[in-house]
Image 1: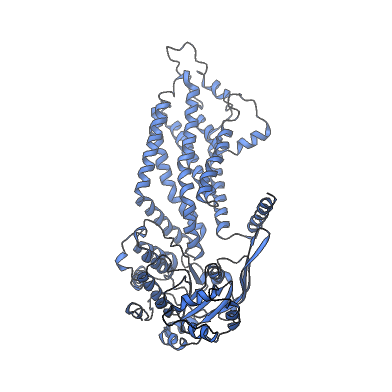
Image 2: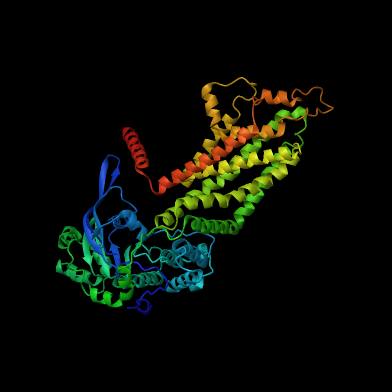
Length: 630
């Protein structure tokens, strides 16, 4: 064995971590099917197996054999369409409780950007350990895990500057903070070179020796890496073709009349046999291991070595411990940590801040120049009304578009952290709103500080406050609408749906303008009442033209100014009965409703309830019917 690997197989002793009981995972007759149109495709076919604590298990198989599907089902990441029995320590698995004590590290290394390794680990410790440990003990835990996974040199490096191997090790380190007894990894060596793969696998074995059940899917490991795994589970065509020790693969195949060449990688050979390159031997292999039920090859030269290397004292203390596996930190603690992380990321994203700063100034200068000195000009009252409408549009698009572009990617991060029990969704959503709001208010004020005086609007404190508060409310609602849309859709679909939905909102906001107080049809009146831009526009008109305000000034070179009288103009616009306080109250209610709807959709995306699943199932059925008919 290589020195690097040999030096890494000691005990993974981590002080101060909460003690967890060992969890042995077994499954019988596990099947998984997906519906493709009217056809149901069976991916897993009644497979059985057992993964024990203290062992590093590799799931192997040809592409499309069902490795990732098996991992997803065992981790509880995919449960719809699965059947069979999954046991933990001989008892039927309690899925909600199992999700709390297991962690799933997915193939793509999704890490929070713009924070260092040390900061990411410290925040993970605050979220996962709560008040169970003092700050000094948390620092010791973080330092021990960083040293264990050899991230000391990258301690002060931001996550986006890490190498592929460092990113993978950090993903593992973040999940070790609260000592989970079960860890799943989807192809942890993919994209890594041989040295980085060796380091990653050896560290996973060291983690397993601490009494944890570590299961990972691996794509064609080298012979050196293959020899490191304690237990191997081979999947072929959705069935179990081998289960047992890595050292038992060659004798197993030799017994079936398939001798592995001396210089050949046993992992490559059994995958090639499973894919049919040497003839149809899959049925013979599946029968030999009884589709995973047979344990004959499990004890092939590994049991004694595993028990000798495991931390027996840690396991014994864990057996008698009882845990409810709820969040270790309170909702308020989670909120504090998440706000701190989000604010830190916002301030470090300087390119984005400067771009947003420049764009707001650019838009403000353009609009200020287009409507320059029109506020008191009675001959240009209509144009000044257009200025109010332009402000509403600016407050709609500038906060909404960045959210549509960035939040779908952030949802993937939330999905990983939420599934692995970092925090609850309520603290996260509250932290997101609180961390975003100051920046939205600041950039809105920056825009208004330029356009309001440039267009010669009334410089009365009450009117300024009314105008500013209305614009800020519209901006916050637009940002929340972006969150609502992008919490369910991909980046491409969000960028399409957002602007398209905004068009009818803009049209409805000006529907009926110029018809005086003549009420529109009931249908259009109800539709207009659903547009928050309408209330924003009414709020701006109330701020600028609300009573008491004297007649506007008609320029000397203009013979007649039709809209000199403010009251007459407001009546012509169909807004004679508007009230600023009613409009701002409705905007506040809409802001609350928009955020509640966004929270609901995000929650359903992360953990859908039965009603939401039924709706999606009906939608998928209709879509399949339409595709078949065409």
